Length: 336
Image (cartoon, rainbow, N blue to C red; front, side):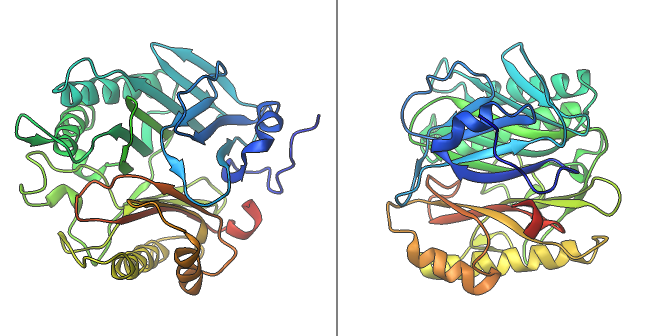
């Protein structure tokens, strides 16, 4: 069976596709990774499959497909799966939490392993990271687990990156219902440019009330792939103005989140070689709900042709009900 065609073969891409077509994608030599969102325990033996313990909202069954521009070279060592196409490297890994208070050291260990593997393979610059772990808002020995994660991440970044405040990857940190500490991400041979949101304080400079070590991520990374081709990797974005969470209702939080996304995209477009447009969005919602009204509201701001994936998840702050991340590119209409 022939794998599904992709219109633009000149640059790696990510797209959302029907889970029923997984077999077709696994036969594609360009496949870097296939991310499933499923609350059943991972059973796949194919290391290209990365299963995240989150339930999709609505009736769809969607997978996230990462494709290289050419045949991928894949491997797995020291518990880290990796696949590269010569320009970009996809990595994913997980670690079991061996004790209730082990999240901070495990995060530091896993981050440092990812850095070491990416460097060894010739892709020393981490662009974008996805972090998933259970009970993100639960306290352990007086410290919220998200704060413990932030401390471990800060420890690793400080050890691995010189002047790391200006070299922070884009990121999301999301709470799953169960499972292990799990990361997946992208690395490149050359760095991207850090983009901050003019409506928000840099997460690196948040007051200590949010974490004893700063939540060390950039709001987005603008990456040039040459010949005017650029990607904007947008971090998890929520209803935060300055450093404070605002609004208590989901609808109001969505409005503020969309305003933040517009501001971030505008800031990136001031630095981009060509205008960028959203290519896809991933929406994390704390409650079980029908995503149709959210889909309609997002379409009013960004258009109705952007692929959207809605997942039920816990957000890094207890009061936040929704978080949105995504990808913007000059080739948005053609990629997907």
